[in-house]
Length: 170
Image 1: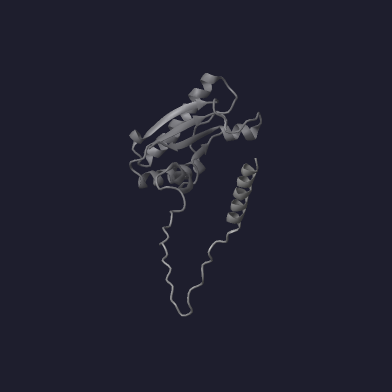
Image 2: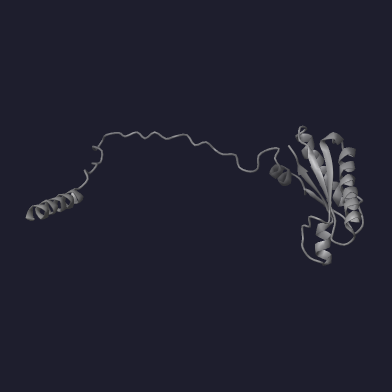
């Protein structure tokens, strides 16, 4: 019976001494010795959005959104500036296509707002076409009042929801 205790004691002592063993220390270089360090050249990642992406579009244009007055779909002077900046971006990326989404506020029937949203999207499309953008690059879709940007039943929310939004496709 003492033999298993003796073996267990020796095993514990061996493990204990092994844990106390010190690691070999690395000595500093000899005085006067030259050391060379090899550095890996840093590759710089491009900052900002990928050219031609939706993020690039949003960063490059005045706005991706044209807002409208109540029951209106006309393009006013501020809208013209926004759409001119969009046309310039599209001229830089002739292979890019866009979708213009027409939106309305919550007032009015669903059918009325779908039709009004389509007129808003088409008004933006027609202005871009008048600036030289190929109409085959532009599709329109109306969401009516189904995708509000601002939730609320007040003039500020309604004004933010009456819009046409340009989204890049490919």
